[in-house]
Length: 381
View 1 (cartoon, one colour):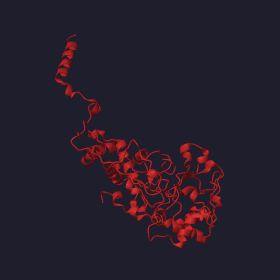
View 2 (cartoon, one colour):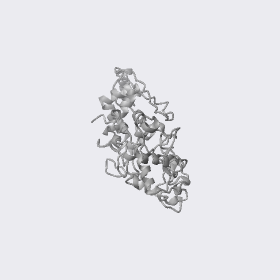
View 3 (spheres, one colour):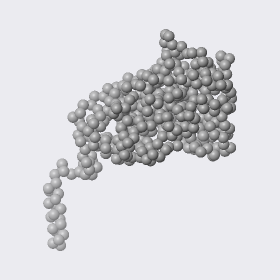
View 4 (cartoon, helix red, strand yellow):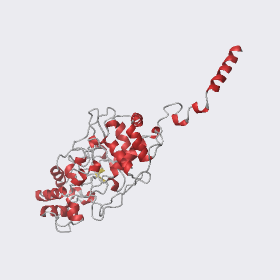
């Protein structure tokens, strides 16, 4: 009884010594790091005036993540910062080089452990205009901010834990200020993976290409610009559907979109005859089918934009073709049979001159203004 009374008195003494301000709050996670107050940093975000090029459709901009100058700059820094990787050696920019239209010119990319992935790195270009908001070769991700989360924890890519990344960002004085300026957070503990992904999404949405020679000569018809004879023939083969008396090369089925066919992709998923299979279950990579579960989607992959295509070799979802010449040879041969090969592929019949003309046209889609834009470059270099 005496011992019980002593315990009661001791508990009462401890409680009397603890003021309300010393009790753990919800913000500290039950006694954790209270974080750093950021309200002394100015929060006056500047809206970003998104440029929509001539004949492009309206951009698909996220209503829940409005673009600001501050958010875009934070996203650019995060995109190129190896702080997102487990060993601080790689970043998003390691596989998405602006000089290569934000691709990497490898058959398939490798991560921090030297392990190679199974799919070719897609170029990041005109993402705000993707018709159906389905990103990656298989359309797995419906939004760019959702897509930006995955590579960090992917064991073949950056192989880090987002909890660790959040801790590193919260401890980083520069990032604390940048997150405050971009999103108005009041405490360093408010830095989250979701906000980091929102910033990366904002940066990636600004990657707009519309200043190729094709744009100058055909879209805007600037004085003194014109396609050479072989380039003009290539364009007609590519998109005129045989109306000019030249062959229909069938390219437009997958690679045209908009009033003036300016995006050079319709955002769809196709089996373009890469592999000969007897059954739809025999594809080594199910592609779109792996996402939808629809057997008919097996072996179908997103049609990438052909803007800057001359800069993004090798080609196809697995990087199997090293050159545009190899790509054209594949199509000129009619592809390989499969139960769901798209109907236009066997119809392609091109001679050597026609293939060369189409390649010459594709080179007019190169936009060095885009690849050299200072706003897109690595801020750490």
